[in-house]
Image (cartoon, rainbow, N blue to C red; front, side, top):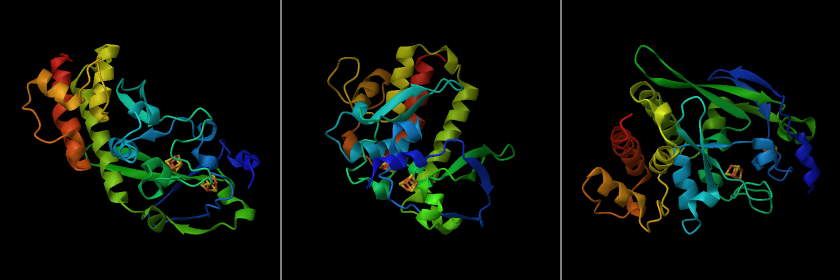
Length: 257
Ligand code: SF4
Ligand code: SF4
């Protein structure tokens, strides 16, 4: 197995739209040692609230900010979480043999590769729907040597928990859109954005120098009755609902934006 196969990522690959009954020719050859799981090839790899939840909970003892990084989206000024690459520029979930340690639960963007999803909002009923593109010839899996096979989009996307991932992607887009319209997010100070990021991405780590879980801290600050459960015992659904529907809007109101 050779690392020189990293050269097979083609960043100028052509993106071809594919409809829901469409096909493309590709096989993940697994001969290239997780070439797609490296910073120099993947760049900023975006995580949804649901991805972050999984990312953090598969290794609860590892500090959140060793696994994810939060950056401000220039367009919306809202925080976005991304994979935090290791010092050697590989994904923290990449095994030494080039496989993914959370394969069944891997993030939405990873399970789509070599596809990408673009989401659109229907003006008539605010529903959100994805459209997919194939990044043709992006990696080794398209090459003759990999013996690419015909992939049906529907089957390719049919991975464990895919519907939940899709649901959270849509939920996140919908809230971002609503906040953009409702609040003057651009006026937030960097500390406020940091706090909003903590809420959005359910980070359980020390904040503002206090050794406490952030939900408890926000409960106090926002005068929301204290939770009877520790954060770890909430389901992904409950967590997302709490952060997206309850805490973040209240926090934004408190900031007067
Ligand atoms: S998806 Fe492509 S780059 Fe990633 S491991 Fe498979 S063949 Fe290699
Ligand atoms: S989570 Fe898994 S599939 Fe995604 S970049 Fe990391 S190792 Fe690769």
